[in-house]
Length: 150
Image 1 (cartoon, rainbow, N blue to C red):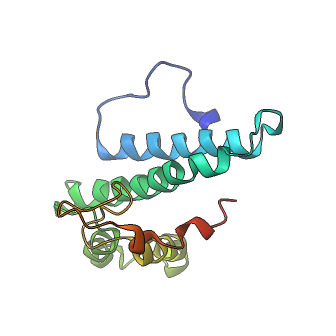
Image 2 (cartoon, rainbow, N blue to C red):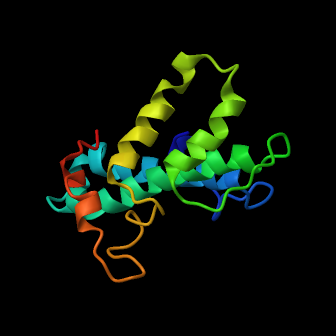
């Protein structure tokens, strides 16, 4: 999904605020931010990439989380999971993907694996600078700034 496919309305809420609509909205937000960084060179400022890095990485991650939850919470699967951990969500969904060709899952698997390197068991390292117990998440996300956004 790209921002050009979203309707030109104040809010994208076609039917209800469910996981699928949230997935589309978060991917659309990522697209808009990336478009600002890489397609509008005249408005590019030196600090934009650094300033928008964490929001882009979070929005992309959260879009994937919402997408996984969309399938898990669906009436066909009906396996609600109370976690933000992408690896746990993907592993819960995997048995239901047995008939999906493996090559169609490669990108999703690689993305879940990528985020699992930096994420905590709770999935909070992308949302907060420290845990509920006040310990910093800096070592969990250390090195994440070396990711090439393109």
